[in-house]
Image (cartoon, rainbow, N blue to C red):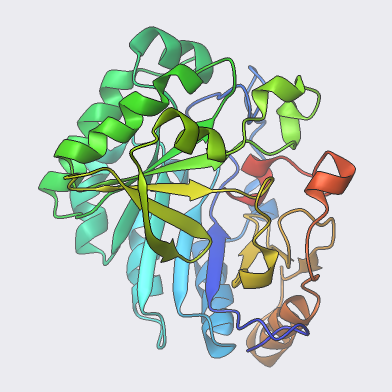
Length: 315
């Protein structure tokens, strides 16, 4: 299905929880997230029904997000359920990697095709500082286990944090010399706990090209500009919602863990899906696609209009 601006919507980012086992400073407060009543969150069956309605509207790719999706009870079973939906061609999941040592193999067996692993630093002390509670060693074990489980061409999501970890840009890029991974540098967006941060923390993705001038552009993957170092096994990706607005090519919708469809990440508009089923649910998804705005206003307003933090929406 196309939105009112002629964009074909084929991608659903489906959040399964707003809980997380880390406390990244740019995402949530040190106290974490108060656990909500079970009745306030979508059941596994309703998440499946929402995905099926989206597939009936033309969605072909689903990415499971959070919070941290691997803390959701029944996540492996949900993946099996989503894999059985007619029309779904690709099932992906974004994770911080901490629980992959136990879950990588079951996820692969359940039909997950690809993993994105969030990693903002390669230094143990800095990792602990950014995440407040995490261990870099756990994530590195998760990476190793994921590859052993058969996940190929892993993607690492690295948020650009000016004055915090931008001195590691070259180190991250160098990982692609020996690993068939794609290291994706993602611009920090002014939403949630980082809205009031100093502008120096919001680094444009072109800073990666300045720090690594040997990178050569090799193409695009959706909204990601892709580069390669000479002789590298992997690639470097740049995702630039602030400096290179890519709204004209946006092909996605998002659904929160409490069952609200967001046509645009940075819009406050949400279409409630909780309690809907069958044709009524499909019509609500269609309304959400039709409500997708032409573009966001991050650059103009200096902050997101989402009305919620990223962990509440789905990363």
